[in-house]
Image (cartoon, rainbow, N blue to C red):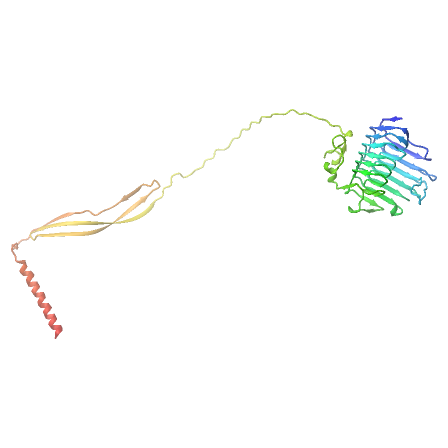
Length: 408
């Protein structure tokens, strides 16, 4: 049986385990669901409520579920009584974003994702299994992711995982960003993991958002106590912060060439599966634009004094010896020669053109002729030497008298 149609709601309510949704060789590809899915079971022990966004229940199936996604809310509830002392009792609620419950499935869930919230509720000693991709069984998940919140509430055991609740097959190249919550009557029966609540198989290259909540019986785990796998195997998953979940290099092992893509404008920045993204390549020819800009600037007038006149008044004192010779002609031959020192003051004016104008008033040598006319006796032959001799003798006499006076 080949199924390649759009399946909007697949849910199954089982009165006996002999009823199933898929059987034999079945392949489901390129399917999506946008509606809410609900499964409910009550009555006698052994009743199952299994719900999945794409497949509710699959048994003895060989085939893959490829390129499918769910955006609706998926819920399964059972009121059928179970055996509280047996974790494998047949009364349970099984809820998965893609597949609810699988038995002896030899296939793979590949390149699928879920964004809807997933919840499983079980009462009267029943178990609840919830997973972002698959809730329970031997399902293999590869290249899948979940961003919806996942929760399980049980009177007995509760298993919650961002990808799978309780599985026995491998999980590879998957991630989860949704919250995970488990509530059980006995707290030790509540299993919560960012990737899987419980698994007995291997997990490779799987990641979960450490900034998302993990809550056990109402108590949130902190970053140090959060787990990728709560029980079953050694936890090999990788916790990432919300910002790290949006960086390509954080996802070691992911094929970002042919399978995965990442862009801030898609899926809130988290990785996306390329099979769900239409890639359009648009070639825009180069555009040449010529812009001519005319700018008018106002005239600027700068008045700069270009001629600086500086007047320095310097007093220069020049001493110029001036000789004045006066010749006096008289009846008494007399020559008078007088030498007069004349001090001249010069005022010097210096301008910026470095032109120095010096005005100097100097002494002028004059020749003065004086003519005296003497009337009376002709003294041209007067014996002047007698006068001089008499003066000398008079002086000598005075000296002698003074000396005699001192001796006495």
